[in-house]
Length: 124
Image (cartoon, rainbow, N blue to C red; front, side, top):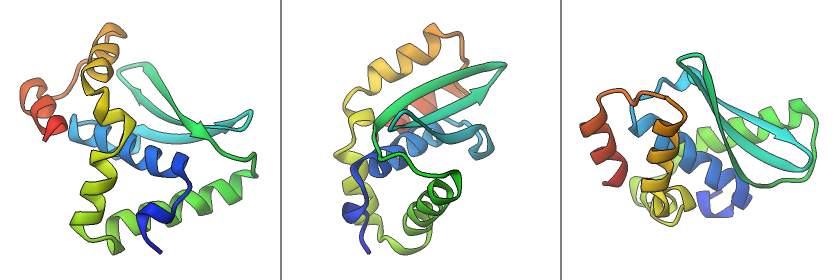
């Protein structure tokens, strides 16, 4: 399977996860959740939650969502070549609104680890 074959909401969730990581946030502070047919990527840090809706995904049990996300992250981390990951990143909504994303984080009072290099990394 290729990244482009994943459900669009899972593709965007991978991109949002990558954006959080490029900004320097720890992987253990990033979560996936589903509610009312929508998929969310959540950053829990510094006593605050920052939630991004990444798209609609048919309601499923937690176990199934865990399997879907596990398969998507395995694909991202272990299978997909760099060119495929880069293509998903470059076509993501989060990258296309990177400035708004960073501004929203800071307006919420979330400090970005290593601000300048992290923001530069997000855009590259």
